[in-house]
Length: 249
Ligand SMILES: Nc1ncnc2c1ncn2[C@@H]1O[C@H](COP(=O)(O)OP(=O)(O)OP(=O)(O)O)[C@@H](O)[C@H]1O
Image 1 (cartoon, rainbow, N blue to C red):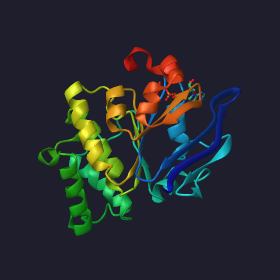
Image 2: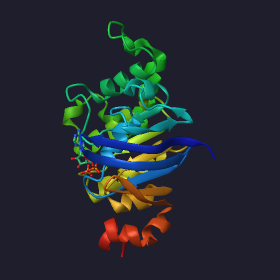
Image 3: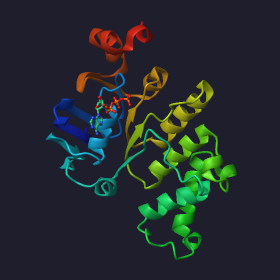
């Protein structure tokens, strides 16, 4: 199976502090891979490295067998990788439709089309409508994003993340702050929207991780201490000791 994301000997230090230490990781194409680990383990840093927001101190990062470390985030995005952020990242004063259309315009190369009547571009209109439907927000299309419920905002954010048609998706804690019912709906949405794509997800909620992931990697103090299918991770004594604690018992 070909590899969608690969990290080879990746290290990241801030001054004298080593935050990511010799990380080797391979995410196969079409796999849903969860990255778990205690607070401060380096998960967000790893996302920043993969998506080009930070440069590794050493090592290399490959997207579909091509080195991308050193490229700018937008260049990595153009090569088919899209990420969401831990903090909600939507334009609060723009409607749901406008937020999504903005992402679609960017993805379809109409970046500087704000002077055109962009709703006349059928390709843009249809794609925006399809994503709106996919994230179940059609009934909310004209509502300013800032007035959506928190769970709806996170769904919109996932819509924005996939709007460009990237086939490698990075989601950073997409269900953080959601109720149990909202989380269940979000997991179903993520599962549906990432069908046939590669997903790397940082998540603290173990029900989400074990419900969604084909594979799990465990990051502790900047090192991957285990990587494998959910049953392997659940039964791994090092992981139980370092992280899962009673949740795995
Ligand atoms: N720009 C930076 N400069 C210095 N230290 C940083 C920087 N970014 C992150 N760190 C440090 O790196 C470590 C890893 O942080 P990171 O946010 O990647 O962890 P995390 O696993 O995502 O944590 P959480 O689960 O709390 O989001 C922390 O000790 C943090 O203080």
